[in-house]
Image (cartoon, rainbow, N blue to C red; front, side, top):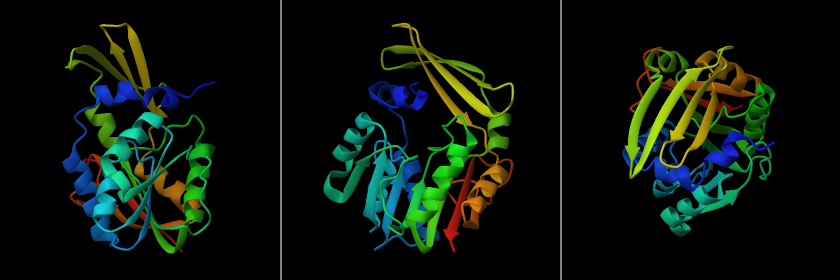
Amino acid sequence: MTEWFEQWFGEEYLRLYPHRDERDAAEAVALVDRTVPLAGRRALDLACGPGRHATHLAARGARTVGFDLSLPLLARARSRAGRAVQFVRGDMRRLPFGPATFDVVVNLFTSFGYFAEDAQHAAVLRSVATLLTRGGTFVLDYFNAPWVRQALVPREERVVGRQRVIVERHISADERFVTKEMHLLDDGRSFLERVRLFTPDDLERLLGSAGLHITHRFGDYGGAPLTPATPRAILVSCRR
């Protein structure tokens, strides 16, 4: 059975999300750099998408590898970064790197939580821990579940280019997932996004079970403290 994320992150995604903010990407990487200096470090951008963050990691002196499943997004990333970043295609549930390969691993802009079973999420984090050198850093940038619940917009209509789109959002009956359905009115197609509604406490437990120790908690890309009212849950952890 094809997973939703195997169908969605392609050319249509790039057309419907042309507004992804370079400033956000630059601020996120700047926060990483303030927390763990990047110059000279071996860095992995896990689920790098079209390469916004990987490019900024490399610009700050990290020897950067971008990793993603989507061929269209990787093509965009290669076009953006040129030879500054090495890109590898694959599924994060089967990471093709050896132990202690990276000093820093980042997973930014809620590029996690896509799987139906929590055991798969836990397995990914255990794999991430093995990729890190002793004392290496993992930065997980996730939406903040309390903020999502409060700010959720159930329905909106927008125009992207020439395409009319209705976006419907809801939280599943078991409250484990937040779901977004995007209906393209002009051609009758629909796309689904479904992300696990992990709270910061849930994420901390997962990271701890993977052998990663939390060192910093931020609530936005400016480095504000994490609270229920902040939009992001940015957890910085290290391998002991």
